[in-house]
Length: 273
Image (cartoon, rainbow, N blue to C red):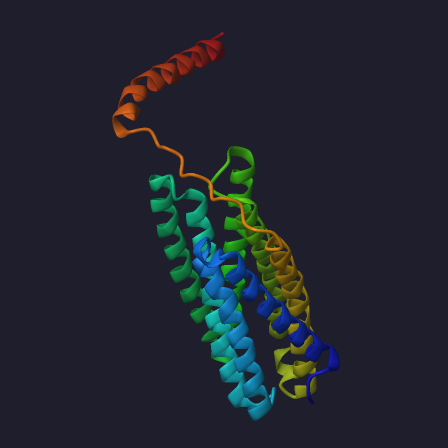
């Protein structure tokens, strides 16, 4: 059973959009603004070309291509997580305390989800593929949550995002939600039907074609959004805001504490009446 015509078309459209986006990134010099994101798009293009090469040599449903595609998908997944880290840094780089807490939290989440995926994969025969699908799902959930929080903070309080970075974050958030939903449904389907599916390889192939097709559709929409964001020259980057010196916080802290104690005392008096 080979790929359908629609799968070929989605693969081709994705490659064309990735190539176009690489050209636009170089033309607009966006690689200096978001270097990790730029490397991620180039990696997506290269892994797509490598996947096509090995697909033609090994066959899409061969065991050899399964391990090759798993390795390529793992590299892309790690790059997507690093883009999330870069966007987080972009939004909070001016606030060292927030960023110091944020990067430690991101590292902890990655290790935690990696261990969780390895534990889930140890229960099933296809360990590498299952571990990747579970890890993608968990990291996608974390990335989508982090990006939503960053966008809400940026909307309410402002951050270092410009229009380009905001559209990158929005598109990646949409794609991560699609990965989260598709991988969750795939895991639940396999958990419910695995014994019967092992006897019907065509059912497995049909399911995985639907899963890949849905993700390709969302990815192509997001790639189109990013190309649209680069249709014009990028605006000048926002200046890094000046943070008050530490001694200023030391002067303000007693006054803030006094106001808090006064408010607490008034609330206590109100509750007693």
